[in-house]
Amino acid sequence: MQEFAFELALCAHLEAPDRVVGRQLGAAVHGRRVADVVCVEPGPEFERRAAITSETIPPLAVESAVGPGTARSVTDAFDCHPDRARAVAERAVDLGFFERERDGSSAAVRQTVRYPDWFDSLVGIENKPDLDRPGDLRDQLRIDVSVGLFDRVVLATETYVTGAHLNRFPDAVGVWRFDPETGEREVVREAEPLSTDGPGIELLDREAGRAKVRPVTAAEKRRQRRRIAERAYGKGWRTYDLPDCQRCAPSAAEPDEYAGAGLPWCDWQDGIVRPVADCGPECPGYEPVGGDGAVDGADEQAGEGERADDAEAIRARRSAWEPDPAGVARRQSGLDRFLE
Ligand code: SF4
Image: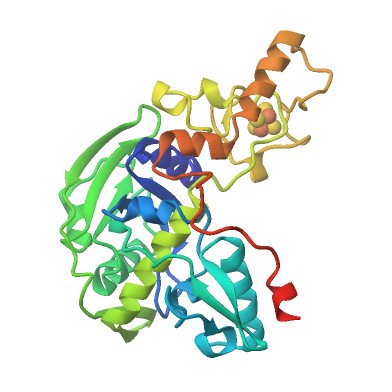
């Protein structure tokens, strides 16, 4: 199975009402590592985070010197170019995380609420359906373990895992054997908890006989962990649009646990497809929605209903993500107006 389909099936399998799942998230401090899947396990202040906004709060807003007490000048409170600071502050106002106050003639903002300590743990999952084509897998897992951004790191594969496979990966890496066609997941080896509080070492590059590494401080790790969790919360894992084809039928997905997950399931191919690569008029099975295909009126209405049950509604139903929070501040539009 293609890695994309494997990854989506695993996300659908892992999604749960007390968890947030994201995919393809930057997981490096100085390098370029991207994690395939991240599971965010909520902490005690999760509801306070969910009440702010359904979207990603800009990292620079969280990391700025703007707090919930006295309003601070936008340009003074951010460690970046003033234009960037204003744009980030405006976004944070739009999301209800900042509110504006007058500070003489300059723009000032304060947090509407203290940024909560909202997640308990992060699990980073690297997908490699076929271990006979490992690519950079060993280095990727070594990076994840030596940096320690995740509380646990797991390799997920469809391959039968042998002792020789296990010996190639760091001992701390857990291994799951996952069958995307049945949704069955076997824990071949438990992941060991990693030290996320202390410093780490990041492998940036490797050439013959030489490895370029860089230390990562505890503060950098804290910041990056929060960024990963925020991104996972705002982005989720359904980063695709369903194809404009009547044969895409998410509710027909198999096994049953996938049927309500909003997967791009194709009845014609009898599997998960990659809409941007597989779908469109060039596909021999393509039947445009609303075209002259063989669907009768009742089926067409059913199809439209399924599409109306959009990715946000599905995500809200199946995960801890809150799509429409009340917010913690009265929304105000356009920091520009204030900056005039
Ligand atoms: S375009 Fe082709 S692959 Fe895509 S849903 Fe339609 S029949 Fe399936």
